[in-house]
Image (cartoon, rainbow, N blue to C red; front, side, top):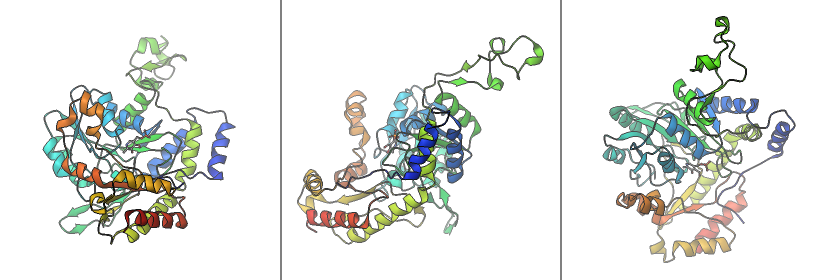
Length: 406
Ligand SMILES: Cc1ncc(COP(=O)(O)O)c(C=O)c1O
């Protein structure tokens, strides 16, 4: 069976995990910091906070951004539900702006239409690994004083160039995760993603205040930093000379309602070992994507993912748009036939507002996004993971062509 996505674990990954299992630390120990530093350096950001999942990372960003009851945040309907759920956890409301018909990313012009007095932030999702138009999104955020939280769960290793002005193009490639055009960026380390820690994720930022909030919320809102203690009477002994430097040895302070979103040293050892191979993994994903595009681009009823000069996708997903009506075969039939041929495909995604929870409980039915719905009706993700062999890629291509009769 060729699944639509899967991890690649080597002996060196196993060795790294075993190394931690034999050490003194299983939960949060020294490897967490090492992974955070390596990730921040890779992306070109100042700070990284490793957490227990991409969903936890999104939740933390909303807490750090101060999203609360009644606040609105604009995001894409073509994403995993977590990109929108994180707002609801904080009492906020997700507002869906339609996608661009070619990139399938949130359309900046549509974001602008959705802004109200209650809007506090924008969560662009780099769908399938292709960076959003961050320059345009940042411009809107500056105009309306909004925060930007990048959902980059699909885009570790992706890069973009900015159009400085007019026709002049800056040659410098910017890594998604550098937070050059945002306040915070979120990654997921789920096994189908670019690198894995089993479950896991991270938030990156260049803002020290946000960084400190993220650390606080990750660990129950508890701080052990004497400089941050607010309740001096409880925190310090009454000898005035010992103030600041000698807090009571048992003392810690809970200053916010936080969570246990910690990632373990065991997982971070795996993440660190995987991070060393990230560039190889992304290169492999891009190679497979170009083989698919070469094979499918001239077929009339199929649209392949767009390639842009200013963006390098990290290709978490390879989504074909297939005109099932013209082909005369329904999507479920195609998926079943491919499954019978040993090929796993998937649909990314049902527009979030179509989910019963959003539609029924929260009356999101009115928030229709026409382009997103057209996209959804034709979407089919092909298998894509770095360990795929050329023989497997060829098998997928031939089976899809055979099944669609093209
Ligand atoms: C776009 C997007 N955001 C958030 C998440 C949540 O990440 P996790 O599964 O690590 O919680 C995912 C996971 O698939 C995702 O695809």
